[in-house]
Length: 313
Image (cartoon, rainbow, N blue to C red; front, side, top):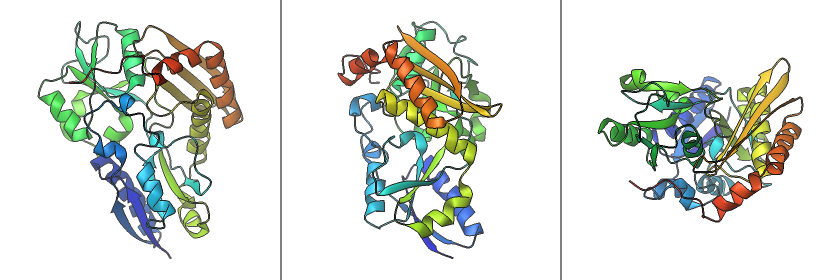
Protein backbone atom coordinates (compact mmCIF):
# COMPACT_ATOMS: atom_id res chain seq x y z
CA UNK A 1 0.00 0.00 0.00
CA UNK A 2 1.07 3.60 -0.60
CA UNK A 3 1.82 6.71 1.43
CA UNK A 4 -0.48 9.48 0.22
CA UNK A 5 -0.32 13.20 0.96
CA UNK A 6 -3.63 15.03 0.51
CA UNK A 7 -3.72 18.79 -0.10
CA UNK A 8 -6.74 20.70 1.19
CA UNK A 9 -7.91 24.16 2.14
CA UNK A 10 -8.10 24.73 5.89
CA UNK A 11 -11.80 25.50 6.28
CA UNK A 12 -13.97 23.26 8.43
CA UNK A 13 -15.80 21.95 5.38
CA UNK A 14 -12.66 21.41 3.28
CA UNK A 15 -11.05 19.47 6.11
CA UNK A 16 -14.19 17.36 6.53
CA UNK A 17 -13.93 16.50 2.83
CA UNK A 18 -10.21 15.71 3.02
CA UNK A 19 -10.65 13.60 6.17
CA UNK A 20 -13.57 11.75 4.60
CA UNK A 21 -11.43 10.76 1.62
CA UNK A 22 -8.47 9.98 3.91
CA UNK A 23 -10.65 7.66 6.00
CA UNK A 24 -11.80 5.73 2.95
CA UNK A 25 -8.20 5.38 1.75
CA UNK A 26 -6.95 4.27 5.18
CA UNK A 27 -9.68 1.61 5.22
CA UNK A 28 -7.98 0.25 2.09
CA UNK A 29 -4.65 0.09 3.92
CA UNK A 30 -3.06 3.30 2.69
CA UNK A 31 -1.12 5.66 4.94
CA UNK A 32 -2.52 9.19 4.55
CA UNK A 33 -1.54 12.62 5.79
CA UNK A 34 -3.31 15.94 5.13
CA UNK A 35 -1.48 19.13 4.26
CA UNK A 36 -3.39 22.40 4.66
CA UNK A 37 -2.79 24.93 1.87
CA UNK A 38 -4.05 28.52 1.98
CA UNK A 39 -5.53 29.67 -1.33
CA UNK A 40 -6.13 33.14 -2.78
CA UNK A 41 -9.83 32.84 -1.95
CA UNK A 42 -8.98 32.14 1.69
CA UNK A 43 -6.81 35.24 1.91
CA UNK A 44 -9.24 37.76 0.35
CA UNK A 45 -12.25 37.89 2.66
CA UNK A 46 -13.32 41.53 2.47
CA UNK A 47 -14.34 41.57 -1.21
CA UNK A 48 -17.31 39.92 -2.92
CA UNK A 49 -16.25 36.83 -4.88
CA UNK A 50 -17.55 38.27 -8.14
CA UNK A 51 -15.21 41.25 -7.74
CA UNK A 52 -12.08 39.19 -7.12
CA UNK A 53 -12.12 37.71 -10.62
CA UNK A 54 -9.30 35.24 -10.04
CA UNK A 55 -9.57 31.98 -11.95
CA UNK A 56 -9.03 29.03 -9.65
CA UNK A 57 -9.06 31.27 -6.60
CA UNK A 58 -9.76 28.28 -4.32
CA UNK A 59 -7.60 25.75 -6.18
CA UNK A 60 -4.53 27.41 -7.74
CA UNK A 61 -2.13 27.08 -4.80
CA UNK A 62 -3.22 23.48 -4.20
CA UNK A 63 -2.52 22.63 -7.85
CA UNK A 64 0.88 24.30 -7.58
CA UNK A 65 1.73 22.04 -4.61
CA UNK A 66 0.51 19.04 -6.60
CA UNK A 67 2.64 19.96 -9.62
CA UNK A 68 5.68 20.46 -7.37
CA UNK A 69 5.29 17.01 -5.84
CA UNK A 70 4.57 18.39 -2.38
CA UNK A 71 1.26 16.49 -2.29
CA UNK A 72 -0.01 13.46 -4.18
CA UNK A 73 -3.73 14.15 -4.20
CA UNK A 74 -5.88 17.30 -4.10
CA UNK A 75 -9.40 17.15 -2.71
CA UNK A 76 -11.52 20.01 -4.06
CA UNK A 77 -15.16 21.01 -4.11
CA UNK A 78 -15.70 20.39 -7.83
CA UNK A 79 -17.60 23.64 -8.30
CA UNK A 80 -14.40 25.54 -7.38
CA UNK A 81 -12.25 23.78 -9.99
CA UNK A 82 -11.83 25.56 -13.37
CA UNK A 83 -13.31 23.67 -16.30
CA UNK A 84 -9.94 23.53 -18.08
CA UNK A 85 -7.33 21.46 -16.27
CA UNK A 86 -3.68 21.81 -17.12
CA UNK A 87 -2.28 18.87 -19.12
CA UNK A 88 -0.20 17.83 -16.12
CA UNK A 89 -3.33 17.12 -14.05
CA UNK A 90 -6.16 14.57 -14.16
CA UNK A 91 -9.42 14.03 -12.30
CA UNK A 92 -8.81 10.55 -10.93
CA UNK A 93 -12.16 10.25 -9.14
CA UNK A 94 -15.44 12.03 -8.59
CA UNK A 95 -17.11 10.29 -5.63
CA UNK A 96 -20.84 9.82 -5.18
CA UNK A 97 -22.49 13.21 -5.18
CA UNK A 98 -24.24 14.89 -2.26
CA UNK A 99 -27.46 16.93 -2.61
CA UNK A 100 -26.71 19.58 -5.26
CA UNK A 101 -29.41 22.03 -4.16
CA UNK A 102 -29.04 25.37 -2.44
CA UNK A 103 -30.59 25.91 0.98
CA UNK A 104 -32.32 28.91 2.51
CA UNK A 105 -31.06 29.14 6.10
CA UNK A 106 -33.37 31.14 8.34
CA UNK A 107 -34.71 30.82 11.87
CA UNK A 108 -37.99 32.53 10.93
CA UNK A 109 -38.80 31.88 7.26
CA UNK A 110 -39.13 28.56 5.43
CA UNK A 111 -39.00 29.76 1.83
CA UNK A 112 -37.98 32.64 -0.42
CA UNK A 113 -41.67 33.50 -0.83
CA UNK A 114 -42.09 33.87 2.96
CA UNK A 115 -39.29 36.41 3.38
CA UNK A 116 -40.62 39.84 4.41
CA UNK A 117 -40.58 42.77 2.01
CA UNK A 118 -37.06 44.21 1.54
CA UNK A 119 -35.49 41.45 3.65
CA UNK A 120 -31.68 41.35 3.79
CA UNK A 121 -30.32 38.06 2.40
CA UNK A 122 -26.66 37.10 2.54
CA UNK A 123 -24.80 35.40 -0.31
CA UNK A 124 -21.48 35.93 -2.07
CA UNK A 125 -22.73 34.27 -5.27
CA UNK A 126 -23.91 36.22 -8.32
CA UNK A 127 -25.71 33.07 -9.46
CA UNK A 128 -27.76 32.96 -6.26
CA UNK A 129 -28.25 36.73 -6.24
CA UNK A 130 -29.59 36.74 -9.81
CA UNK A 131 -32.10 33.97 -9.18
CA UNK A 132 -33.20 35.48 -5.87
CA UNK A 133 -33.77 38.88 -7.46
CA UNK A 134 -35.70 37.31 -10.34
CA UNK A 135 -38.13 35.82 -7.81
CA UNK A 136 -38.12 38.71 -5.36
CA UNK A 137 -36.84 42.03 -6.79
CA UNK A 138 -37.47 43.71 -3.43
CA UNK A 139 -34.87 41.65 -1.55
CA UNK A 140 -31.64 43.32 -0.46
CA UNK A 141 -28.81 40.95 -1.34
CA UNK A 142 -25.64 41.61 0.66
CA UNK A 143 -22.25 39.96 0.11
CA UNK A 144 -21.44 37.30 2.69
CA UNK A 145 -17.96 35.77 2.88
CA UNK A 146 -16.22 33.51 5.39
CA UNK A 147 -16.54 29.88 6.43
CA UNK A 148 -19.87 28.28 7.35
CA UNK A 149 -19.48 29.08 11.07
CA UNK A 150 -18.81 32.75 10.33
CA UNK A 151 -21.84 33.00 8.06
CA UNK A 152 -24.12 31.31 10.56
CA UNK A 153 -22.84 33.55 13.36
CA UNK A 154 -23.75 36.64 11.32
CA UNK A 155 -27.20 35.19 10.67
CA UNK A 156 -27.74 34.43 14.36
CA UNK A 157 -26.61 37.96 15.25
CA UNK A 158 -29.47 39.35 13.16
CA UNK A 159 -27.42 40.81 10.32
CA UNK A 160 -29.59 38.90 7.82
CA UNK A 161 -33.13 37.56 7.62
CA UNK A 162 -31.70 34.59 5.76
CA UNK A 163 -28.55 33.34 4.05
CA UNK A 164 -28.11 30.92 1.15
CA UNK A 165 -25.69 27.99 1.46
CA UNK A 166 -25.10 24.73 -0.38
CA UNK A 167 -27.03 21.74 0.95
CA UNK A 168 -23.98 19.52 0.50
CA UNK A 169 -21.81 21.49 2.91
CA UNK A 170 -24.52 21.61 5.56
CA UNK A 171 -25.23 17.91 5.19
CA UNK A 172 -21.54 17.04 5.48
CA UNK A 173 -21.01 19.17 8.57
CA UNK A 174 -24.27 17.94 10.14
CA UNK A 175 -24.76 21.06 12.25
CA UNK A 176 -27.49 19.94 14.63
CA UNK A 177 -27.98 23.42 16.09
CA UNK A 178 -29.44 24.73 12.80
CA UNK A 179 -31.29 21.62 11.64
CA UNK A 180 -34.63 23.45 11.88
CA UNK A 181 -33.27 26.49 10.01
CA UNK A 182 -32.46 24.63 6.78
CA UNK A 183 -34.96 24.84 3.92
CA UNK A 184 -33.85 23.28 0.59
CA UNK A 185 -34.64 25.38 -2.49
CA UNK A 186 -36.03 23.28 -5.32
CA UNK A 187 -34.19 23.16 -8.64
CA UNK A 188 -36.86 25.01 -10.61
CA UNK A 189 -36.54 27.94 -8.19
CA UNK A 190 -32.74 28.07 -7.98
CA UNK A 191 -30.45 26.17 -10.34
CA UNK A 192 -27.19 25.12 -8.60
CA UNK A 193 -23.64 25.83 -9.71
CA UNK A 194 -22.00 23.35 -12.07
CA UNK A 195 -20.51 20.57 -9.98
CA UNK A 196 -22.20 21.65 -6.75
CA UNK A 197 -22.36 18.83 -4.22
CA UNK A 198 -19.52 16.87 -5.86
CA UNK A 199 -15.91 16.38 -4.80
CA UNK A 200 -12.99 16.25 -7.21
CA UNK A 201 -9.91 14.12 -6.55
CA UNK A 202 -7.12 15.60 -8.65
CA UNK A 203 -3.75 13.95 -9.29
CA UNK A 204 -0.72 14.45 -11.49
CA UNK A 205 -1.53 12.88 -14.85
CA UNK A 206 1.76 10.96 -14.69
CA UNK A 207 1.03 9.46 -11.25
CA UNK A 208 -0.49 6.10 -12.12
CA UNK A 209 -0.10 4.74 -8.58
CA UNK A 210 -2.24 7.44 -6.93
CA UNK A 211 -4.80 7.28 -9.75
CA UNK A 212 -5.14 3.55 -9.16
CA UNK A 213 -5.35 4.01 -5.38
CA UNK A 214 -8.39 6.32 -5.61
CA UNK A 215 -10.12 4.67 -8.57
CA UNK A 216 -12.56 2.83 -6.29
CA UNK A 217 -14.01 6.20 -5.23
CA UNK A 218 -15.09 7.18 -8.74
CA UNK A 219 -18.85 7.20 -9.22
CA UNK A 220 -19.97 6.85 -12.87
CA UNK A 221 -23.21 8.82 -12.43
CA UNK A 222 -21.46 11.67 -10.61
CA UNK A 223 -18.74 11.78 -13.27
CA UNK A 224 -21.24 11.83 -16.15
CA UNK A 225 -23.56 14.48 -14.70
CA UNK A 226 -20.77 16.80 -13.59
CA UNK A 227 -18.94 16.41 -16.91
CA UNK A 228 -22.16 17.51 -18.60
CA UNK A 229 -22.54 20.57 -16.36
CA UNK A 230 -18.88 21.55 -16.73
CA UNK A 231 -19.09 21.21 -20.52
CA UNK A 232 -21.99 23.67 -20.53
CA UNK A 233 -20.04 26.05 -18.31
CA UNK A 234 -16.98 25.79 -20.56
CA UNK A 235 -19.10 26.45 -23.67
CA UNK A 236 -20.34 29.64 -22.04
CA UNK A 237 -16.80 30.61 -21.09
CA UNK A 238 -17.84 30.90 -17.46
CA UNK A 239 -16.17 30.28 -14.13
CA UNK A 240 -17.50 29.63 -10.67
CA UNK A 241 -18.10 33.34 -9.90
CA UNK A 242 -20.56 34.15 -12.72
CA UNK A 243 -24.39 33.93 -12.78
CA UNK A 244 -24.57 30.52 -14.46
CA UNK A 245 -26.47 27.52 -13.09
CA UNK A 246 -26.23 23.97 -14.39
CA UNK A 247 -27.73 20.78 -13.05
CA UNK A 248 -27.73 17.35 -14.70
CA UNK A 249 -29.34 14.14 -13.50
CA UNK A 250 -29.72 10.62 -14.79
CA UNK A 251 -33.24 10.05 -16.05
CA UNK A 252 -34.44 6.80 -17.65
CA UNK A 253 -31.00 5.96 -19.02
CA UNK A 254 -30.34 9.47 -20.32
CA UNK A 255 -28.93 12.66 -18.88
CA UNK A 256 -31.31 15.55 -18.34
CA UNK A 257 -29.54 18.93 -18.17
CA UNK A 258 -31.04 22.22 -17.15
CA UNK A 259 -29.04 25.40 -17.59
CA UNK A 260 -29.57 28.98 -16.44
CA UNK A 261 -27.84 32.26 -17.25
CA UNK A 262 -29.20 35.28 -15.41
CA UNK A 263 -28.48 38.99 -15.21
CA UNK A 264 -27.21 39.74 -11.67
CA UNK A 265 -30.14 42.08 -10.99
CA UNK A 266 -32.62 39.33 -11.90
CA UNK A 267 -34.12 41.33 -14.76
CA UNK A 268 -33.40 38.61 -17.33
CA UNK A 269 -33.20 34.85 -16.73
CA UNK A 270 -32.48 32.49 -19.62
CA UNK A 271 -33.36 28.83 -19.10
CA UNK A 272 -32.76 25.77 -21.26
CA UNK A 273 -33.40 22.07 -20.67
CA UNK A 274 -32.46 19.11 -22.85
CA UNK A 275 -31.83 15.37 -22.65
CA UNK A 276 -29.06 13.36 -24.26
CA UNK A 277 -26.81 10.35 -23.87
CA UNK A 278 -23.34 11.89 -24.30
CA UNK A 279 -22.48 14.15 -21.34
CA UNK A 280 -20.11 16.65 -22.92
CA UNK A 281 -22.02 16.92 -26.20
CA UNK A 282 -25.21 17.62 -24.26
CA UNK A 283 -23.48 20.26 -22.15
CA UNK A 284 -22.11 22.02 -25.22
CA UNK A 285 -25.50 21.90 -26.94
CA UNK A 286 -27.31 23.54 -24.00
CA UNK A 287 -24.52 26.11 -23.73
CA UNK A 288 -24.93 26.95 -27.43
CA UNK A 289 -28.69 27.36 -27.03
CA UNK A 290 -28.17 29.80 -24.16
CA UNK A 291 -25.61 31.76 -26.17
CA UNK A 292 -28.01 31.96 -29.11
CA UNK A 293 -30.60 33.49 -26.80
CA UNK A 294 -28.29 36.22 -25.56
CA UNK A 295 -26.31 34.68 -22.69
CA UNK A 296 -23.11 36.11 -24.15
CA UNK A 297 -24.41 39.66 -23.64
CA UNK A 298 -25.18 38.99 -19.97
CA UNK A 299 -21.77 37.44 -19.38
CA UNK A 300 -19.90 40.20 -21.21
CA UNK A 301 -21.58 42.73 -18.93
CA UNK A 302 -20.51 40.74 -15.87
CA UNK A 303 -16.92 40.39 -17.08
CA UNK A 304 -16.77 44.08 -17.86
CA UNK A 305 -17.85 44.76 -14.27
CA UNK A 306 -20.75 46.88 -15.48
CA UNK A 307 -23.17 44.71 -13.55
CA UNK A 308 -23.45 45.54 -9.86
CA UNK A 309 -21.95 42.97 -7.51
CA UNK A 310 -23.63 42.40 -4.13
CA UNK A 311 -23.13 45.43 -1.90
CA UNK A 312 -20.57 45.13 0.88
CA UNK A 313 -21.87 44.84 4.46
